[in-house]
Every structure is written in C-alpha cells, then in structure tokens.
Length: 296
Length: 271
Figure 1 (cartoon, rainbow over the protein chains, first blue to last red):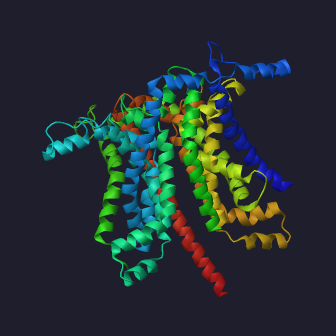
Figure 2: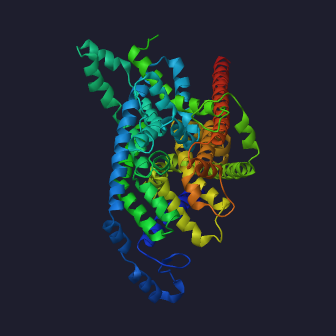
Figure 3: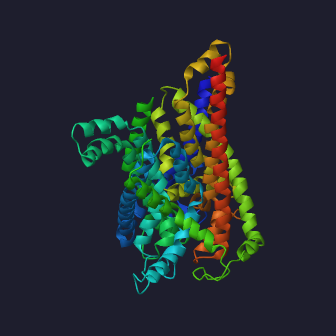
C-alpha cells in the first residue's frame, strides 16, 4: 500500500503535467482557429453527452497540417533546424572530445577542479552566455576589432546574424553536455588496455581508433543526443545570434504563438517537431536505459 | 605520476579559453563608462548604480527568486521519490512509460514543453502567473533532480537499509534515518540544480506566465533583443559572481566533508 503511494505521486504528477499536455497539443492541432476565447474550436462539451463527443470528434481535421505543407516557410524551417543542429552537434563533438580526453588523461588530483571548471558555465545563466557572444561577434565587436588590429582583415566580417553565429552559440552553450558523458566514459577506460595494444605493436593512433573510441562510444552517443535534440528546437540562440534570415522552427513556433496568437498552427508545428524528434529521443532513452542496466 | 602530453595541454587550454573568454569579456565591459559597448572609455561602476535604481529589474529578480525557491523544493521532493521508484521498485505496470517520462523532458525542446503546459493551464486556472510558472518549473526540474538522486541511489549499499528493517525500523524510518542521510549530498545538489534551472529559464516561463509575473530572464530578454546594453552586462557580472562563489563554496564544503568522513571511517576501523 505504502509502496503504491510512493510510486503514484511522481507517476501521476508526470502524467498530469507531461503526458496530458501533449494530448491537448494534439487535440488543438486538429482544431480550427476561431475568433473567440479560447481562440480555437470545437470546444469539448461534456454536458451534451454522447452526441457532444461525436460532434467534437467529427469537427477535428488535419487542416492545420495541410496548411503547413502549403507554405514554404515551414518545411524550410524544419529542414534548416535539423541541418543547423547537426552541424553544431558535429562542431561540439570536435571541440568537446579533446577536452574530455585531456581531462581523463590529467593527473587524478586535477580532475575534480577540471570537472568543476566544465560545470561552472552550466550553472551560469544560459541567456547571459548567449548574450555574451552578441558583443563579441557584432561588426564593431571584440573579435572584429581584434582581427583588424592584427591586420588580418581590412573590413569587419559579418558573423552576427548569420548561421555561423548560431553554430558558435550552440557549440558554446551545449559544450558541457558533450564533455561530461564522454569524460565519464573515458575515465573508466583501463590504461592497461592501451599499453597492451602498444606492446602488441599498435601505433598510438591505431590504438586510439581501435580501443579508446569504441569504449567511449556510449558517451559519444549520449553527448550527441543531448546536444542535437534540444538544439533542433532551440529558440533563444537563433533569435539573438541568427538574425531574421536564419530560419529555425523554434522561432517559427514562438512567433505563431506570441505574434500571430494562432494556437492551432503553433500546436501543429509542435506536433511535427515532436514527430521529427521522436526517433532520436527513443534512441537516446534506449542508450540511457542500457547504460543504467550495465551499471546495476 | 603521468605527465600530460602537449596535445592534451593544448586541447585543455584552448577548450577552457573558449568556455571562459566570452564571460571574461562580458565582465570587463560591464565596467566600461561608455554607453557604446564597443568603445572602451575608461573604468566606471556607473551601470551598477543605474541597475540598483531600476525598480522593475529588482521586482523581476524578486519574482524569479520566489519561483525558484518554491519550484526547486517541489522538484526535489518529487524527483527524490521518482528516483527511489526508478531504482528500488523493481518491475511494476508502466515502468517503461515512467522511465520515458523521466528522461524525455531532459531533451524536450523548451518551446514544446512551454506551449503544452500553457494549453493545459489556460482552461484550468483563471489567471496564469507565478503559481503556473512554479508548477511548470517543478515538472521539468524534477526530471533533472531524479537523475541526480538516482545516480547516488544506484551506488548505495542496500544491505544498510535491510539491516535497519531487520532491526525493527518501519520502511519510512529506514528511509528517514538511513537512506536519506546517505543520499543527502545528492538531494542537496538536486535542489541546487533545480534552483538554477528555474532562475535560468526564459522560454517555459514566457509561455506559462500571466499579468504581473515577469521574471528576470524575461526582463533581460526584452532588453537584449535590441542589442548590447551595459546595464545587462552589470547584471550578468553580478549573477556570474554569485554563481562562482556559490559553486566554489559548495565544492570546498563537500571536499571537507569527504575528508572528515574518511577520517571518521579510519577511526571507526581502528577501534
């Protein structure tokens, strides 16, 4: 009995505030925009009994989804979100792996400090860390001033308000999410395996490819998912750094909701975004579950 | 002792420079006396003074702190329960669904979470505001909290709990007297994590807020959308300072506690 209560509290909380809201999003995505309060129809009318429920379902349709396919804006935004997220994830891996590797090779007494240095930015406001790049990347920003002072360029580079700025922003803010799982995997790696490989005539680079990378695989996979999935729906970074020409679906959803006040279309955008992410999210969970079972 | 190869030293140096330089630059420019952020016009604390006179900013900070305190406490209680269920309850109906609901919010794009919670709250509550932001923050923070606590529960020696039960403790007593003190460091870090997640959040709060409830991130957002502003640099510097002091203090305290515990264990073994 007591066990049931312990399970029920978090379970019901998540069902009420995580699962049911998705059902509502789906329902409103199938509704029509209306000039009323709330601004969509049909309304669910339980007092009308069975007939009311049938009427309700007969009024749901896929009109909003059809609308999304007719306007170029939406599928272009989806496509460019996935592309931007993929490129940024790759950059994060490229920068994050050597840092995680260096941390795992560092003397043991340094490691807690290095770990703290990686986590510290994560505790600082996300918004502030993105904002810091506005002052660096703008045309009169610190980076352009620095490069011009060195004489490497004559006129400022346009970086802010381009996709490049978004790649930098995502890589920067999500870097700890990539470093930590890879570091966790590399730290457990037994150094004797590498020595054995070298003794058996492997070059260091071959040993790295044949031993280190496969053993760090789960960490790399977890890191990539932790960066890629939220990056696809990112809103703050493309809005602050990407300018008006960088299309990302999180921004489109935000504008549908806050500027156009079109809840049904915003919901339809959310449903499709979720459909795109459902496969990576499921893979991510399987990876986590497998690691958990391996630990137990 | 192993020596670091030049490759590792370079990658660590460049990596940490990349992580920290942007924030250092932000802090330096908060002391710039010019309104133009790009031109250095001499040292000044002018923007800090203006910040302290900005009542709207201070109000928003107060709202944010209240939301964070309440939602972090809720999230820690729910997250600890959830971790306990995940690690200890074995198989039960819908365990896969439960595990899924714990991990999915960790990667769920914030715009989706925000929109779905707004659509849930709108018909239920007359007015959205601080209370709805607290509920929303508690929900996504509890997932982070449960991941932190469950990592500690997994490495925990279960026979201690069983011993307590054998000696006549009720399951609740065993939890309160044995399990909770041992997982306490994880519970505290879960609370701190939930607190900062709530302080930080712009997107979910924007969706679930109502009239009169403006949080600090929303205030910062409306200021920085128009470009760089030295007052926001000053505010950022204060926030970075608080976080740095907090994290360093916490890590020193936990280090000292670990040393003390090791000492006590040695003493216990000797006697």
